[in-house]
Every structure is written in structure tokens, then in C-alpha cells.
Length: 543
Image 1 (cartoon, helix red, strand yellow):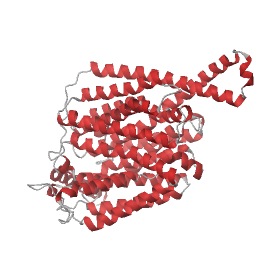
Image 2: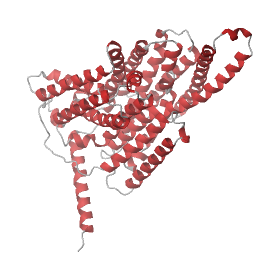
Image 3: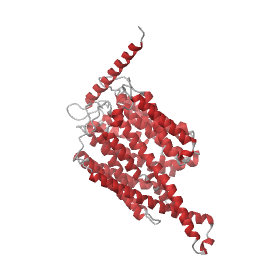
Image 4: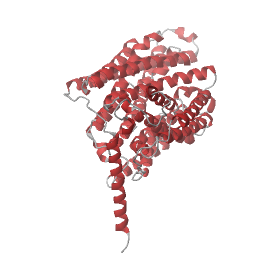
């Protein structure tokens, strides 16, 4: 989107022909966003089906899924540059073509490196296509460019699609095969390409900005660091952590690339992520909050599936129906944040306290009510609370980064840091920690329960050994989950107390600059980089 999208008068999109009613034009791009967001490479909801038919491990599929998020996050730093280099039509057509190829590859390959690289590339282009659409309708969503309002829209789309895609994937696999989800999305992406070619004109703004001065080497190094971090978190338990050469190798490569990135940032004129972005107070605060908050609700990835499947006996369709509860929480959380935080300008402190309170409800419910006879409907309250809490935290702290006072040159870099810490670290670090704690606590409880069983009467002699072992493991799992939920609940209460005792009167006033100003800033960056390179060449040229 650019300033010429919003002349004096009603909102319009010049790229779309006038035979499309003006009021329907924004919904065309929302339709494109939904298709793109549903196309993310592998579908984690079908992981169990993929494990059974492809021979891949659960960790392989998780790694591919998180690689897509890394590709998405690493794109933030250059998405504005790409927007001002290519037309919206070109961005959508190329992105759709790449996502079609990614869906075809992910439906057939069993090669893990190819799967991971494909998902990484798919994540990159999914982000670029999403940004191309959302930036086009930004002034329609918020004519005053209030980013708190804009992010409410972004998260209700992105987080809702995560839940809905899981539901669609499981029911597609239930009625046919998991590969059919890829073919459905391939068809929808092809439909999107046809609609773009017919309904979107190759309209480009008055200023052509080349892709000069981008630190592509830095982008690769940061991607490798993020991949190594994710690899350690995902495969750590499988390889027994530091006893395995794979984990040690990933740690060495990750630390090395991180050090190289920091070293390059100390002297490069325009590093991919600068120290200004990494040292910004709001970015650091958001990183700390993300690590604490998403670790508290990491039981989503570690416990919930095992509890519902192994203890409550839910099948795949009943398991995925729980996504509707989370979906309801996401919608309610976005609506609540829109009316309170975006419109009424409630303080950051108040919104953070509300999010942690919802996380406390989630943890407390499972701690007090976890049992063998819980009905599916009883899980609505905790899952609803978790969905609402996560989306509130994400909107609030992403808005805080816009309000952090960073120059626009550095702001996209801060978005990359936020994407990595919020989406990647939040989804991998917490589950890795909680999963390792669960393994040790469960071994302890299983040992204690096994010792108790041997001390009871001889009636257990008539129970088959395999059945007896299963009973011990099931009971140990329930006891261990309750214990961990209790400890996490204590940490959540302590975190809420710290938030309530802290003083902060800051309210959101994060307003996006005009697109004309953004173009001038990017143009100045390119000119500065060109002069910098020319001066270096003159110095290096012998007299």
C-alpha cells in the first residue's frame, strides 16, 4: 500500500480495476491473505499421519514447521525493501508460485534437509505475500495508521488460521489422506494466481527503489543461528542433549554464527540486524516477557496432546475439535484488545497483567481439575483462556516495539528480533525445558509408584506385567503433570505480582509513518549505501 492508495475521499485500491466495487476491493486482499496463511509447507496437525506414512520422525516434522516460522521472521527486515522494489501483483504471483512448489515438495519428499529448506523458503514468501496484501489495505483498516488497531487485525487472521488449518488438515486426513490438504491448497493458490492476473494490475509507485545495501550474508548467518537454536530445542531430548555430537555441533555452529553476526554488526554500515535493534529497551523487555510467558503455557505442546489422547482417550477428530476452543479465545482476545488497548488506550501494564491472569486461569484449571474423567466440554475454559492470553501478549508487545522510538531504518530489524523471540523461541524453548523437566519428574514418580505397588497385597500378581506397567506410567504421567502445573502456577502468580508492583503509565500511541516518508527513508538508505561503497572503492583503488 502507498499514499496514492488513499487520496482525499473514500479508500480505493488503484491496482484493482474499477469494475470491482470499491467496498469489495479490500476483501479481495483479505481472501488472498487467508489462502497464503493456510499454505505453510508442512501441516503440524498431520504430524502423526506423516510419521506413519513417510517414515519421518515427529522431530523432523516439527523442525520443518519451525523452519517456516524462521523464514517468516527473517523476512521482516527486508519486507519493506521488497515492497518498494516490486509491484503487489509481482509479489503475489511469485509468492503463490513458490508456495505451490513448496506444497508439492512437502507432499512427496522424505528427505529431511530438503523438507526443512523448502519450508524455510515457503515461510519467507508467505510473509512477503501477507505483507503485500496487509499493507495494501492498511489505510482501510486504520486511516490514522494506528498500529495497535492494525495488529489486532493481523493476529486475528494469523492465529485463527493456525487453529483452522489444523482442523481442516485433520478432517481432510480423516475423510481421505493427509496429502490431500496439500493438493487443496495447491488448487487454491492456483485460483489466487488466476485472480491476481485478472483483478490486480501491475501498478507501481512513482519511486523505484533498487535492492541495494541489503546484508544478505547477515540474513543467511542469522537464519543459520535460528535454525541451530531450533534444532537443539527440537532434537535435544531425542539425542539426549549434550551427550550427542549432533547437539554439540549445532551449539558450536549456532554460537559461531551469532559471534560472527555481532562482529559484523560492529563495523557494517547497514547490518541485517543492528545493535540499535538488539539493545532497544522495548525489544529486550518483549524478549524477556515472551520467554517467561510462553514457557508458562508451553504445556500446550508437551502435555495437552498426551493427556487428551492417552488418558482421556480422545481420537484425532476429538483432539482437533479442541482447536475450536482456542479459536474462540483468539477471537475474544483480539476483540477485547481492540476495544480496550487499541481504542481506549489502556496501559501496557494493565494488558500484560490481564494476559498473565488468563494464563493463571489456564494453569490453575488444569492443576485442580486434571483427572481421568474430564469431559471434552470441561476443557473450554483453560483452552479459551490460553488462546486469549497468547494473542493479547503478542499484540501488546509488538505494538510496544513500534512505539520504541527506533528509526524506520532499524524498526524492521526489531521486527525480525521480535519474530524470532516471540514465535520461534516461544514455541521451542519453553517446550524443550518443560519436556525435560517432565522426563525427570515422571521417572521419579514412576519409581515411587512402582515401589508402592510392590508393597500392596498379592492381587496384583494376577495383572499382566505389561498392563501393570501401563497403569504405573499413566498414573505417573497424571501426577507429574499436576506437579509441573503447580510449579508453573506459582511462577505465574509471582510474575503477575511483579507486574502489578511495577509502575508504568505508558499507553499505546504507536502510529505508523506515512508511506511517502517511508519511501524517502529507504531511498536515503540506498543513496547512503551507494556513497559508502563508492568511497570504499576509491580508497582501495591504487593511485
